[in-house]
Image: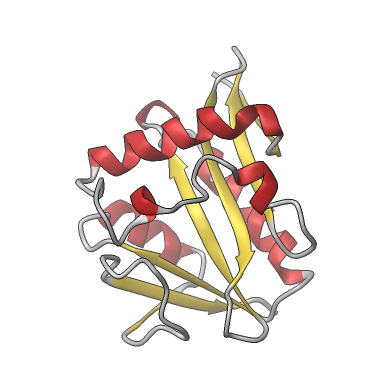
Length: 160
């Protein structure tokens, strides 16, 4: 099945929220301290519509959203953005669409930022391997403290 990538539209808010919540449940991350508790989870079109902040969705041939990724400013860390809410449903994994999402996000990030940060969970092993393929290096201390206190693995990479 083929997929397309497009910028998030207001009509997509509920569907991408459902995708993210399904992935969080799958990995046991449906609790506080993760994206599960983000107050803005259902209003991405309002959050990711300013310069330096954008969200993209992966859509299957039937028009269903199967994944997404965002770039957002990391408050308190000049020149650093955060790779945010990168999730794909199981049926989209292994198809190459995650690579297209990542490349789209990093290309955009390079226009505004010098480094890209992300947080994930220790049990998301495949995701960690994926991030490392894209040059993200694991770090012990985050550049700033975020509300995702349950995320116990952190990465950063240069964008030049």
